[in-house]
Amino acid sequence: MDKKDPEVPNQKIPLNDKPKEVVTEKTPEVNKETQVEREVQTGKKVEKPKVTQETDVKKEKPLSTEKVDTKNKLKELMKDKRFIIGFLIFLFILVFIIVLLFLALFGNKGQETEDNISANGDNNQTPSISPSPEENASPTPTQSPSATPPADDGKRKIAYMKDNNIWIVSTDGTGDEQITNDGNGMDKRYTAIDWKSKRVLSYARCDSVCKIYTYQLSNNSETEVLSMIPFTQNVSAIEWSHNGSLLAYIFTKGDSSSEASVWNGSSSTSLQMFAPVPARGGMLDDKVEIEFSPDDSRIVLVNTLTDLPSPSVGAYKPDGTVLITMGGMGFSFPTFDGNDGFYYKDGNTLKYFSFPGGSSSIITAFVDGSAYNFKTSPDRNFISYWWLSSTDDVTLVAYDVAGSPVHIANGFVYAKWLDSLTLVAIKTDNKMLGIGPISYGLYQVQRVGGANSQIVAGSIYEFEIEDL
Image 1 (cartoon, one colour):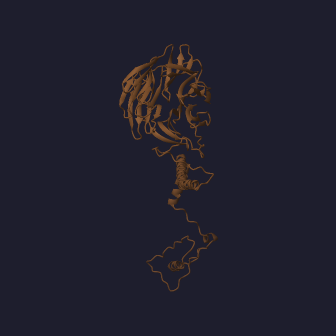
Image 2 (cartoon, rainbow, N blue to C red; image 1 turned 120 degrees about the vertical axis):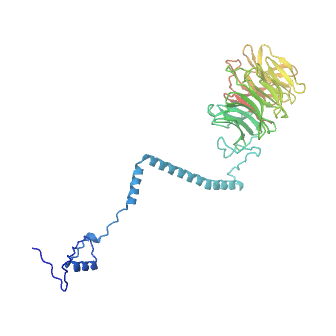
Image 3 (cartoon, rainbow, N blue to C red; image 1 turned 30 degrees about the vertical axis):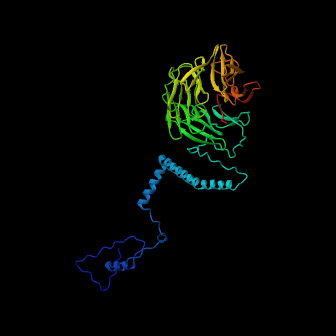
């Protein structure tokens, strides 16, 4: 039987009221005052729950729903490859920016320190030489300038093209030096060379765009001078005026037409347009060249790579004024004789055009062969050319303007005058073995007697002698 609850003294329970049921709450702790009230209401003594060791230890608060959701989302994102790749790219960009900032901040300090050392006269450092003030563009080196540029030996230099790159050598064959090393004849091509002034070389380079540069031999620094119009295929010829203020050039456009222009440092003036050359094989008369008169008042040019019989030879003023145009098959190789006229080839004759008279005259006719590449000697007494006989013999000749040809040497072509007694020419076979001369190197050739001497060996296809 159930045990009866003990009676509560001095307390009566009303007849109409039912005793309240006591709901026992399962809580680890019961407030003392609450316990007394319940005992009074029910007449039962509520026992205190036993507190076990587990209730004395504070339990960790469970993570809120918001935190649990964030954590689950992060886990899901970490499983997503796109998120991981994007996160890595973000880190890479962040590191790259930090490196750039580091170089910008500390690289300049290092340069200032280096400049200070040079300025203080440290014998172990070579002071850097700034580009000439006449160059307007900012320097863009082809390769890093040498820490110590070679000492100037005072000798006259020759720039030449070999193995798709540009080299320089002294006229006596010493000091052979490679200037560029990135030409490959395909997506990076060096296409024309000239000397702007003493120790300042100039050349055209075509890669994604064709540009003309100057190169200071004193500190091995390259400076961009002129950028061609978009889609230019080639810069065939460049020529600086003797005072270095004008640049004449011939370039091939994207539609295969050509144009000759003059740049004055701020703008270009067109001299002549040339129609695209039709499909045909090369000829020994083919030439693309441009030349200033000694006083820079006139320009003559030739471009046989056009739709002949269109004019291929012309004379102009630097402002674009046309003085004379002529051409057709067999017109080529104009070269100035002083300031008032120029020699040129017309078929199988050597002619002279006079600016004051405005007319041409025949100097000599070539019989039993043909002549190529006319050049006037510095004293204007001789015209050099190479001769191909009907039996394919190759001979270098100097024509005396007094009226007779002078044999110089066999097996030399494309000669240029070093002085009035000496020429620089490309060595080839004594007989033409193919469609054109084969190059075996560059030589000094004496006009009158004396031994011919090799300057540099190799397959050289273009060269320019430094101006005095």
